Length: 338
Image 1 (cartoon, rainbow, N blue to C red):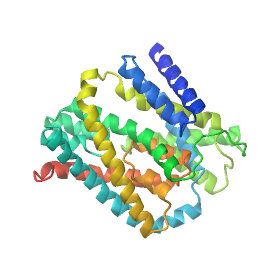
Image 2: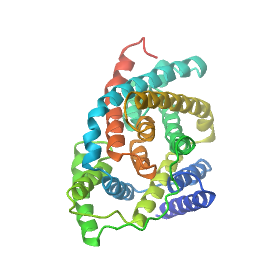
Image 3: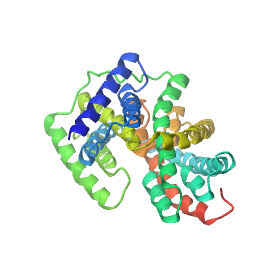
Image 4: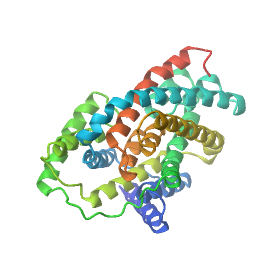
């Protein structure tokens, strides 16, 4: 319990410092940075699973308030972006594996799994089963998630005129009764989705329940922003806890490769997003967040911070994981890949 309180305190300090400094998406990026540093310095940083899931429910409920019939009617343009996104994922993974083998002397299996743009638990399971370097894969993938969490808001801030200060709004908020009903239904649906092994089950549970409630005007109003901001801060803290137990030697062995892979991923994702924005009427901001191969929960939550379409972003990141579920074993099976 003491380590949890210390972790939350460090995350809160990071959020406050980032907000004062005026950083993009401060309540997400601040805790991610500060808790990562603390974990690398040897602090035992941890977040209980139950607290993590409760935060995902709150963020999901918040995201669902932005899903409208107009947004869903635009889904007819999504197949183009889905196809190009899958091609971009394949390019990131295969070119990243080549880079790791050519310049970082990784073996073929480790290079392919370390370069996978997402699906961390799935990839780590493969790593253990086929004899790849699990520690190297885990640290490289954790660096990818952290750097993308920090860089995507910065890219959007440079390219678009978006307000990412996460200031408190004064709009109508959900009544306590509606909030309690949505929360209970979201937990129930999230539990069911988790039993079906759906990724980010509680986040999607909250998003689906809230989308129906707001779409039918049964539960008008936004989530209390104190809850939403607190959940973003805990999510940022959770990203930082990935580095608990990582030694300086492990970090040094993976740092340069992780940075290079993330840079490659950002360039490919940006070019793919730019291509789709040219071919369709989809906003570049939505495409950047949907194509950036960060953590599913983090990128979907970021769509709320950056004013993107949460349904579009969530659908694409779920599709990315489904594509990787097929492409990763296929790439490992064909010796020509990587």
